[in-house]
Length: 154
Image (cartoon, rainbow, N blue to C red; front, side, top):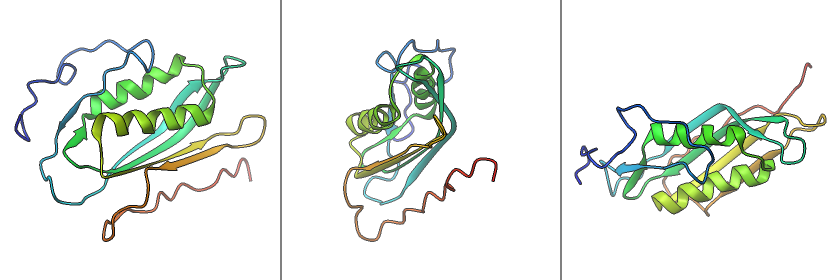
């Protein structure tokens, strides 16, 4: 498969049903067009939703995913479908955030990945969840996530 060959993709450019769960979601990848070049890819999902596993009430987060690709890039439509599969999925904030990051690491085998899960308050307390695979390589430019802390109505 060349860097522009998308023939193996099953979702891009065609109608795709919403997956029933994150486990059912298909994450697809495409070849990195610049292997050997260190660069950062950022995905921001400011309207991520999941369900509280105890109450079934919706939870909302602003997710920021940064990764340094090795051989693969995540195909963005499949990532969007994967993230929206959490809408009917009950899990605590920490589980959602880490499940997303670890699935991306498993599928992409990036040089480095980090996720910031900036969750809106539940019971008056926002819960922010951060994880990364290790220290980024020297010389990599990785912008700050710059998501302001939750200020409520203040």
